[in-house]
Image (cartoon, rainbow, N blue to C red; front, top):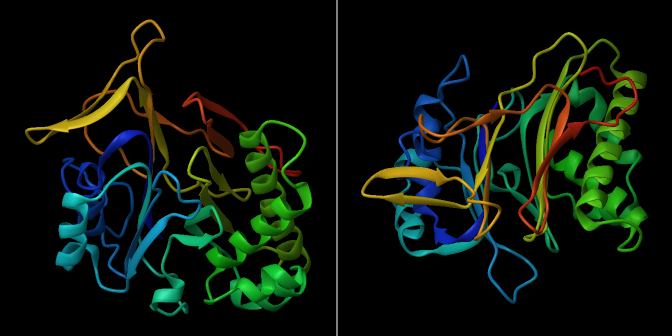
Length: 292
């Protein structure tokens, strides 16, 4: 399994997520608190959006996050108002290589996953057969995660840019991608267990889910939001929103980055929606057969 972080708010250095918090993402790469195996050493990736550019910047490596000095140097000087970061613990049988390293990117969308599709080696070919030609040709690696992203991109292509609020379209496409994956799984690998903590962003808004098939507990996922997130003198915190005024910030993370402050656990089989207004909404997933 893996750990990941999403941030949206005022521009801040990547170090405010990757190195400065007491439970920063680099710390989680060696001492994850909410996994039986605390190491996430099979590579890392960081994606950050820049004003005026549709696609995000992307830095991925197969080296462990804790030992990569380029990552620390980059985190110290690069700032962004929208960041996705991931440390990987590769599922058994899936290669450790750059094309298998999260986040995955296509156009303005960036995607990451914590969990696994059970029986993926059996499901890989039928999942590919269900994809559109464009989604199939975009595959570069061999992970279940990238195949889930391909399903999502298919669903976004079908929904188009019209009809409904943008964050809702992201959420509905993600739900349909999960439903399609589970439909294939029920036909070709019945009885397997699946854990799908997914997050996708277009740089303005994001949707994440904490989902597991019946009888399984999903991987951990938390959300925190307020007026502003900042790190000062080694102390990181979220400043509460005052009377609904001022700038706002949102964090979605596999684990709380620090012990103080309000971190809300995402309920089982629920979605977190971070709208472009920075409003945060949590709702039950609309996937057939899903039990909260």
